[in-house]
Length: 445
Image (cartoon, rainbow, N blue to C red; front, side, top):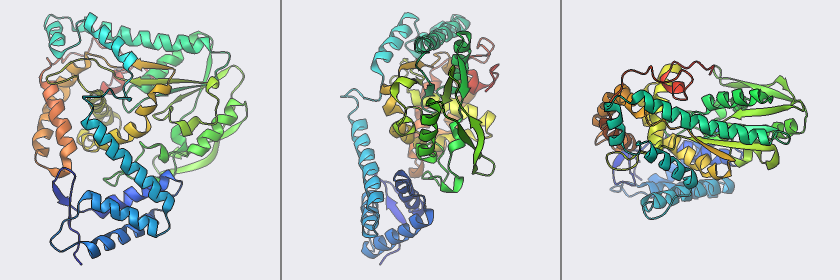
C-alpha cells in the first residue's frame, strides 16, 4: 500500500494529488441526477483514495485515466449507478471534445453559427476590418472614430432586426430569452431591446433567474473548490420551469429571493402574474438550455443568442471569440465585482468547459443571433491589459498546474502585441455594449 502524493496528467506532467477535485467531480455528477449530498461525495472519495492506494505499486504514479476508472468502480460498488452513469457520460463527452478539438481543422464545428459567420466576415471585408493589419492601417490613418461608428451601427442593426422579429409575433409571444456565453453583452442588449419594443407599445416584465439559485452549500464546485455559478445545475430548474409554465398560462407565482451575501434562498417573496398585454423578458446564460423551459410551447417563446463573432485574422489565426470574452469579463469583474483579473484567467478554462457543454451547443435553437463583437475593442484592450498578459505568460510558463492559463495568456499577449493601442475612449458611445465592460455606460445595468 502506497500513499498517493502525485498524479500524471494527460499531457504527461506530474502534479500534486488533490482529493478535493475528486469530491467535486463526484458531487457534480450527483447534482446532474438530482442529488446534493456533499458529505456522501467526500465519503466516496475516501473510498476511491483507499482503493487507489491499495492497488498502486510503490514505484507507480497513477494517471488521470486510472483515477477516473477507480471513481466509476467505487460509485457502482456503492449503489450509485445513476451518479456513475452521469460521471461516465461527462467523461466520455470530455474525451469526445478532445478528439474533436484535435480534428477541428478537418471538420466544421457544430458549435459555430456558420450562416451568421459568413455575413459577419463579408461585413468585415467590406469595411477593411478583416485582419489586425487592416485595423492598424485605419487607426494609423486617424479613422478610429469612424471604425467605432461602423461597428456600432452593425450591432444596432442586429438589435433592430431582433426587435422587428419579436414585434411581428407580439400576438402569440409570452416570453423573450436573451442568452449567450459569459460577457457576450446580454445586459446591454436586453436593455436596448426593451427600449425598442416599448416604443412599439409592448409591455415587459423582467424575471431575474438568479433568484432561483440553490443555497450556496448545495452548489456544485469547480475543480479549484470555488462554488460554480456558471452551471445550470446551480439553479432550481424544475421550479423555474414550473413558474414559467404558470406565467405563460396567466397564473400567479411567488418568486423567491436569493441573497448573495448569505448564500441563501428565501421562498415566496414576490408575486408575479403576466397581464394579457405583457411579455416576460429574461436575461440568462442558460435561456436556451432545454430543461429550463421544456414545459413552455415553442410558439410562446422567442429565443435570442448573443456572442462576439469577430471575424478578424490575427498573427497566427482568426482571433478567438472566447479570448474577447475573457478580456471583457476581466475588465467587468475588476470594476464591478472587485475580482482580480488573474483569477478570471486562472478559472476561465472551467467557464469555457461549462459553456461548451451547456450554452453554445444550443445556439441552433435560437430564433435570431446577434453579433456583439466590436473590431475596435482590440485597440482598447491593447492599451489596458497587454502588460498584464505579458506578465502572466512569464509567470505560468512551465507550471503544469496552469497549462491552460499559460496557453491563453501567451495567445492573447501575441494578439494584443500586434494591435496599435488606443488610449482615448471618448469615441465609444456611452450606451455601447462595450461600456458594459470598460465602464462609463449611460444605461442602468
